[in-house]
Length: 169
Image (cartoon, helix red, strand yellow):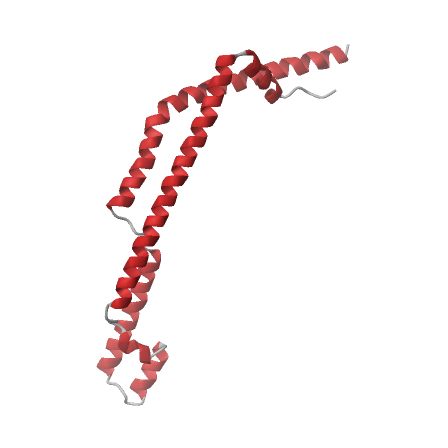
């Protein structure tokens, strides 16, 4: 014989208790709306950052390339070879090494940087405010859900035990 699950008992409890049904429906809707609002805000932040970074990269491309003289040297070895053939001085080699290291460091910083400004901070605050505004009601509804699930679990256990006891007589 199939055991009765707590979900089945909860379904009956919801059918019998209109307030419980409404509270659990409200909780489901609240969770869905909060998730959707969070997704919308996250999407807005992503679109905004992409737009700002695109503008910034276009602006950077228009500016004069401060590392243009490194275009002639693909590797550190090529710089060393030019020094070895007396094409550049030791001081020039050191300066080119410094420029190359600086360029690599700037590339790493750009890759790991996240665009953050007042607008993105406001959007994050809005997401946090949504959570704060609805926290109390969500907690109340979650408590109702927890109590209902506990009761459903208890009832399912009693039903299953009574069935098992009846069958073993």
